[in-house]
Image (tube, rainbow, N blue to C red; front, side, top):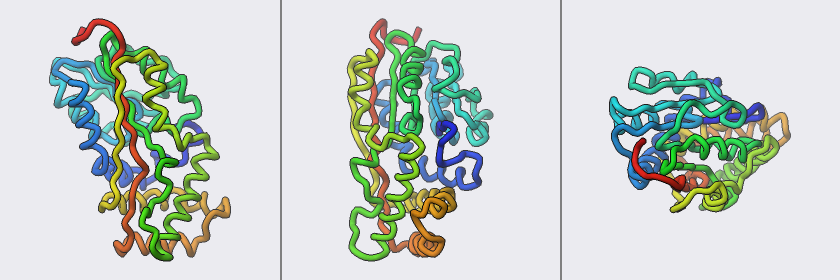
Length: 270
């Protein structure tokens, strides 16, 4: 997962692995469905931006085969490097600051990357420029403002506490430059970037065991910052984590907006 200097969820923290596994369990099936929609094929050259964990690059490598190429980049590649044995090239790279890697690419994909960056426009432009004519871009980003509650069914004090802590977490994200309504903008931004055949959809779980894992890992990562900002007490955080561990909460995620489009020009792998 991409990050800038103000990124709240540090990939170097031990909880990052649990977060990546939970995000994979929650969203990989939807991501792979979108890859099938754009028509990925053998021999394609793919750039996975802000890869975080290894599951998406490994899936891409299996699909494009030995004649293809999969490049996985991130600011911190410590988790992505577990994919190197599966035919994935891993490169430390900042999509908002560094020159795009050598391409061009048939497919460029980023999930939960741009929403966290302050220079989203530059990063999106770099990904579009890295596409070959006819190449596909798939961008997936959350839109917490569309559905701000982690417990949509706020029927008791445990759910109210969960939603209050989630509000504090999103306040921290906003302070670091995250755009909490970014996901809904993706279709327009892809068209403005010159892509054609732009489509988008949204997906979010309402309750799922990986949602519990994701919430616990996230809260552990940001608990000190929540307390320091006066957004929660240590007792409240402990009580919430106990509620999560007991399975008493139906935890949702923010809607994941997936948008895809094609760079104008000749179709088919170069």
